[in-house]
Image (tube, rainbow, N blue to C red):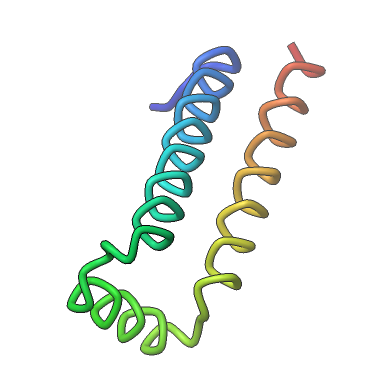
Length: 79
């Protein structure tokens, strides 16, 4: 099972909105100096274990979203 073409596009739109809001919140907390050091340390340790940096992880997520949108678009052309 999975989403139909329209469902994929709606899903991707919602995921993109969540990611955008998450980036805004993190930027605000960072500017206010309110990010908890424990959160930053934990996130950095996880990324290090995965062989990633924060910018690289963000780039990979954006690339995955582009790929999924392209696949959804290809589904549209096949319909």
